[in-house]
Amino acid sequence: MYIGELARLTGATPKALRHYETLGLLKEVRRSGAYRRYTQQDLAQVKLIRQAQALGFRLAELLPILAGDDTDWAALQQQIAAKRAQLRSEIARLQQLDAQLAGIDTEIADCLRRLTLP
Image (cartoon, rainbow, N blue to C red; front, top):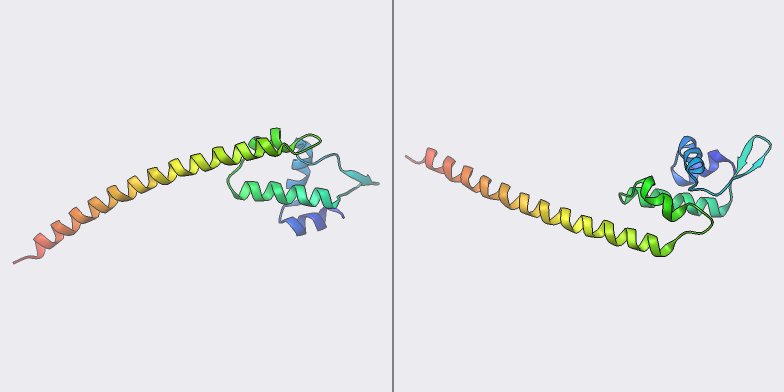
């Protein structure tokens, strides 16, 4: 398939696909003349990259895992565990912030009630 079809199937732009190739996230793409020819394996790789990006991974985090001949699934699993730990930490921080905001909201509501009492 050509770059336009790969872009359509993955939601990536042709520019992003060429960037993935330059970074080494896509194996060397075969060419027919001046045109890049992508395989089903390239399609799966781009879908994996896009899914990882949607989950908050940066390309720099994916490079050591996805670049090269084979995907390092153990390293990817470790990256996922680290990302989940970061998320749990962020969730705890946000819950604490929410509790603080709830406390302030209660104080404001009490003040407003006192102001409206005769």
